[in-house]
Length: 538
Image (cartoon, rainbow, N blue to C red; front, side):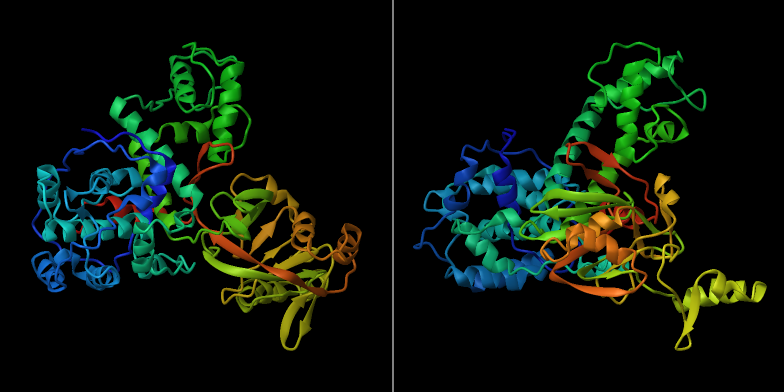
């Protein structure tokens, strides 16, 4: 029997699992995913407190070693097994005197529906596990108990943690993982004490919902792939292709109804603008090359893109308890977050494909008004020295000077850093700053910098960061920006800064957005999640 839909509370609770570290070895147990076995009848709010808390039924600790010996794919979880069961004095967690508790069926359903979390892997020993669960024999089974815990650990490793941190660093993602004591967490969960609402970003669950919707589209065969017969369609045009465009906009929620008209009318114009907003395209209401390219993408590509970004969500700590800045490179956007609410946002310019902006976390500590620009050695060698050979007056013309054997640009409106910069000390020499090149913010694709991040609203950002210091009024901030004299200001409260990379995300309006993979970062994750050649634990 297929399990009923459950509330978000249980979805979060089932994710509060022990993290298994490392990859286990393969075995030959490959089987088709079985059907769910039992309908859940426990209210989501009661789940955590309803695990078996019996204290009479115990097993010998040596049973764990015996089980691991015959199930080597769980070997990497051995310490987690020991820590968990020693903490509960080797009492059964998934059984009571009558046999399996209902939570075992809930876990089983989550395991066989693993792809709803954007994971293509099959759980280890699935055939044996399915036999244990489908039999549902009465009484207590130590092997079944340990199998359930092993599956619990596997699920946590895939859904809660994702690929190992060593792999993410190879993909140049340098944001540290959140450290958690998973054995203690699972023990707390079974006792109904775990605070499970802070384990994954809310964005993860939003993407999960969209992924499920896309799987439904796949199942129903309702995906529309546009095959244009010309380069663009605009207001007043008529074509059978426009009828298909209308249908796609309707299914995506970009227009309210599909009247099946083949005329490019006002509804289509409005729908195309909404589509363009979701894809980061120029909002002109014309179905041009960019719109048609995105509409021609196959369903499989969008499913993979959502899953790839769900995986990225697993790599980030949940920062709901503090304020932070969040820069999404492919979106060319900076947002200021307070308890998961956007309080300020602006467009940004990021590094080129040659000078990629680094993905990492820092802590904003300083605002620097009327800054000098200390020119990096690489730019001096590649750009300034050759320019000086062509024009001996290059430094003077660009308001630059030598300073201790190096070159710097003096403060002023034409300074490359603009009127203010924002420092969060890091080994990558990345920071946020103003820019005199305001016209670049009119571009849809804004990858133009040497790696640092240019912000379109520097005054608003300075005002936001200095909001805890009443001495810094708006008038004082404007005066400092235009003083021509460099001034460092230390923030009263440091602010975490996350430079991230998401090519699919759900915006505050609940709309699913997609962006171009400007640094070609998606492919490596896609191969880990979906490639047939990728090693899968079985």
